[in-house]
Image (cartoon, rainbow, N blue to C red; front, side):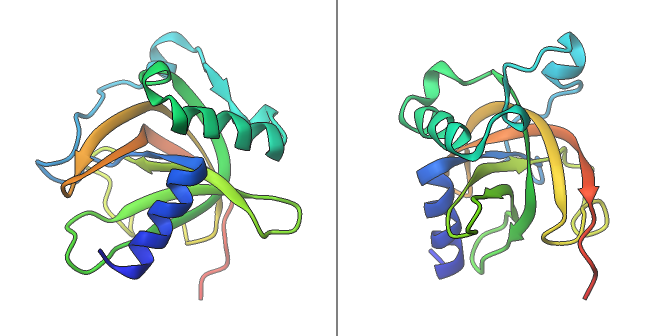
Length: 161
């Protein structure tokens, strides 16, 4: 497994999950309409939590994911993506940093297959908000937990380089 992918997965496994873009046939199922759009209900709204509470909640989701699968999550943070050699999937994440920017927590996420990178995504390090359903699946022969999202909202677009 590539070094950068190992680092991203380590960060996300310690304190994060993901939102998913069903990019190929091996990707998890797409939702025609997100759970939040159907019910208007957000089960876990991380935008109302401070960093410490968010980290504790995500840690619990990591330790006992089965009780959270299918729940709707709202999360705001910095957009990052990574594509490692040898993997067919580009991985997307939204991360929140603590006050000293030394620690982070967040989720991996995927959008529907019709969303293509980079055209349909914000610039790296843009602040975004996602709403998605916590899902577990196998992507590129890896078991991952992520947020299955229909879309995202750009809060603050990062400057292009």
